[in-house]
Length: 177
Image (cartoon, rainbow, N blue to C red):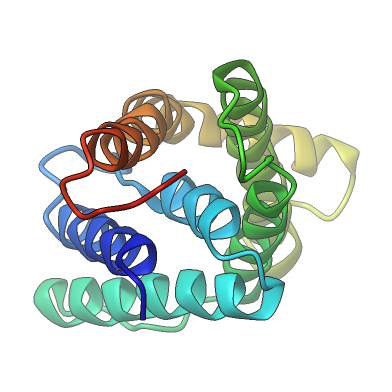
């Protein structure tokens, strides 16, 4: 394994640990992990596996610590979102990091996660009526949770990409971008 991937995996592990300890509910680096994995690991399958593995390990530990079930009604929708976000990250140009694209992909990924996961809640849970009114009610109810998620995306995405860029440029691990 070359130094580029070692640094990337180290950052993903740190981000996963940050996810496990969330002092603020829904303030986690899951979107950043997916985008970054897709950006770094050019083989889509590898990027998806790393994203899903980091997410699943985080979910297992969070579930164990908080004593609630690992699998829930919208579990599939959450992990489908992670896959799509990782594929978004794979579309970023690996030879030259363009921060405007990272910002656009980050915001888009955050919105994608919100839409897919809350659609999953609406579809799989009996709380909401299965009509357009119930769907709208579900999305409105999710906005307070999305606020923290979106803010965390605005922080973690540049933090992970920036950390990688700074460490690579300083040649701390002899990485050439």
